[in-house]
Image (tube, rainbow, N blue to C red):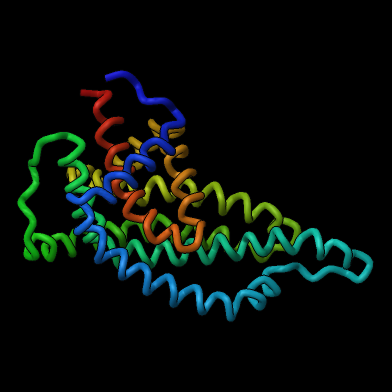
Length: 246
């Protein structure tokens, strides 16, 4: 199989969106979509009420003679708060939807490979996936939290916090690749450390996919649909990029 282009992320996400909208997979998308929609509305309602206070908390206190810099720095800290709200929503949504996302990744892999090595659908099978997928989500959380806390601390340090937003962005792009490509990796019994090592080998392809997914998920409303599309796109990424070795 010829090597996939390094910047193939948009292609994978676009194909993933087409797949989840197809009749055969639509059923496996509806329930997590409903759950994520409720969570999204709740979190956005809360964030709108608290947003101004959060920005003021992170904004550095400047002497009066530098007050003009407030107008320059304010947009940067607005972006910082938006990125943190986005991270919180994505994290919670993926934990709640993990069993459904794992199951969706199975079905997309069947379509991509044209062969089915997974058990047929049953509610018992879906229930059996809950402990495994939730355990994997907790492993992601253990990977995410120390790095996120470090960035959060950085966000409170005057002057140094100017680099917090770009670092959150870069970290977010990487975490999008980790988050979604882990579903097919876990379904295929690849360990967490082996999955991370494989993504590092495919660093630019992974960042390409993570970047376009991150951008799509930042769009309010659209992000509800783009979550299952990202699961499907990540599964296509897994099948095709792993296929280069076979």
